[in-house]
Length: 148
Image (cartoon, helix red, strand yellow):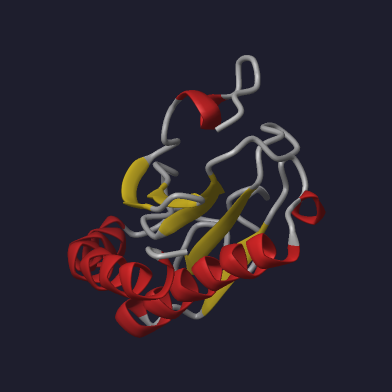
């Protein structure tokens, strides 16, 4: 892994590690109000998706797809948001965020101003489902990406 100076995603996992492969890792971010906020982080320091070779792009998007599918299957969110911004950290990572009609920002982006408070009981209910979701996700990632 090529490390960039002062890059937090080179220096640490960037959240709770869910799965790590040779090319990428999946972490659960600690974003208040969004209990099912995941990131697919390319392990090597790369700023843009187009910097990856075609097989690497396919590998990365397969991981993003598997995370999205797990969120939909286990949480039944109103929507799953996908984003690759890199404005704050020039290290390729995809945000994969389960969104619910009750969340503080819905239907606006998670980076917009909050429209209301998120109900703590709803957030807790989602958090209670995360261990099963992450166990299933690890198995799917192992099956689809571990050898690549």
